Length: 313
Image (tube, rainbow, N blue to C red; front, side):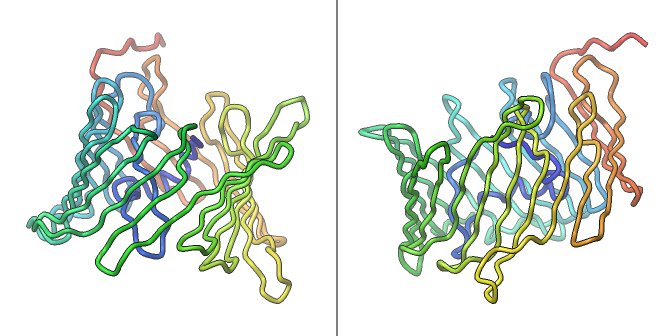
């Protein structure tokens, strides 16, 4: 899994709704979130993230699975998600919405997951509102290699089918997503040796709208699973090809934290710097992140299950 924590910090509340699936968006197979997905190390019990747009609260069990997340927009407007597991599998997720301090049972949803492993794995996700109205059902089908190959979405307007195809050409692997027969997305993965002998992974993702090219992103990922550069493209109908829009270079410090991002659009360059303050224990979890030149910051309050040895000053 690619851990691009920059994207999580830009809008961390997408975690709580990342599995909400609209008609025009490809379904996603059930996702389990761990401490590591939030750049947290060690036996973290809870983490509060405070930003300029609100705050996020995350709670984890002893195994490191996310069990609860709260997105607070104001004192009376907030969303709560609960995650329930069995045998390290997600079996239930509840998304509750509160507006003006009142629980909204119409927009609050419960997700139930069922697993069938014969002959191959199949996962069924049923979505009901808290008012007990059926919303949608998703079925995820896997092959003998554990690869997702088919998704069915049943809703009031009918059934949508997504097929996932896998192909290999030399050292390149491509995954294609087709929604009701129309290409929606392709992900091509290849490898290249960089200076110094390091082997980098190159991931090219192309997005389509009903088979028509829309945009693309090419990411270069190092052996530490860090995104070191990305290039955004938009499709030009005039040139009948993808044209580059924005390039980003990601730099990391000696503790492997994101240190700076340099963006280039045409001839214009802009740099964003990240400075960290740590909680002083041996795990090195940061508790404050300062972003310059805008001088904004993100604060984290971390609670651990067990006492953590403090580093000697």
